[in-house]
Image 1: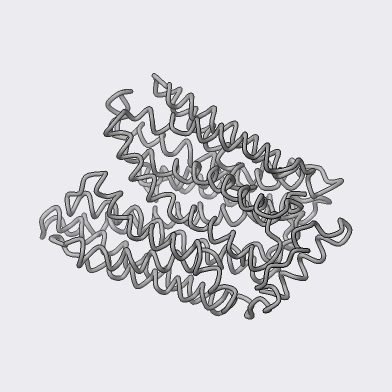
Image 2: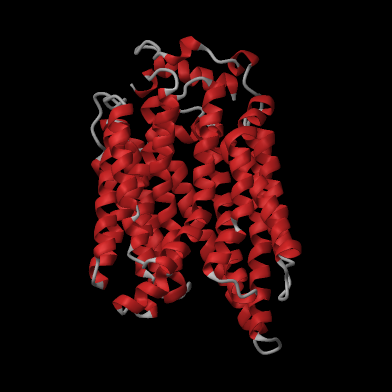
Length: 500
């Protein structure tokens, strides 16, 4: 089992795992900056260009649950290495693509590899660090990578596209993927799956993957097809029907893909609800504020990336140090609520940013609060989502929380973008184009602030109170070795419930 690794080798393994995760997170935003160059080079129309993004999101969002459960059954290390290999090879094909069809297909394969890596990486980290204090620190590192990677992607995408070409936003993954694969082979010992004697629930896997893919497709294509169109409503209805069928299958299956009892664990259920709301708010901040900087203030892509640096640096300082100590001192509930309410205040500040705004007075204060909020809240939310879960279900729990983020972010962004567009259209007759755009962005930011505040209120009210015991704050040498196989699941579950 991976948590038998001793000493500093675990921290090296953490860095390698987070490097693999960073490669996946970067890819969700690094492409956005290069889309105009890709369209000009390969002849994409405005309508077809969206599939460079949508093909990735479709397979990524649709396969997270399946990837997590496969990791539980057949070994997290094996699936992580397979996902990294698939993602790296697909990146090579993307970088060499000379046609629209080849690029879109390779992006879909990238999404599949990214889903597997994202779903099992959190499980590997949770199993590497079983002592409460060290786990909080490790989750802080992971949280920083997830929270800050998207902003770094914008900056890196602008640099690579401006200095080289759009091909390099994909080719840069090759040395990283090869290094991550080799270092994981050296640092992580082979480990079998935890769910011994179980078989993959094929019927459940097919229905939930199809349901998620249909839902993601309906959302990402909603603005183009129309939210009240027969296509969008039909796809959403089909996704709901398949989800209902999946729940029936899971209630009756001997070895279900997703044990429904997981959602009776209060912290797991609460953390996923919070994740949906927070993702909607954070997606609104990242994408809508980037649009405000570009379309209203006239920033270039590289300047947009630099504008996000303060938030990234604050998230780094908090996630890599202070956040873990705050969790150890106050538990999960208070830091989560405080962080999300700070993020809500940051979004509210963006909701008043004027057309002739300046960076120091109208952008930086909101960025600072959002960096503080994300840096404080991400760690306790991830810990809450995984704290009550047995090792045999850790991959699934990781897949569920990642799915909550993706679906919450996609749905939230779609809704907020539609609200912004409706407000801008209504203002066109009585205001300038820039003023109308800014008014729409204000609406999106206000609703994002409401989502973040709701997430903080729910997390602060419903998460189980308490904090880790003082004994767990001290490094314990005997925690570096694996517990007896017959007692590991029970002990870890009991420890999670005691400490959190």
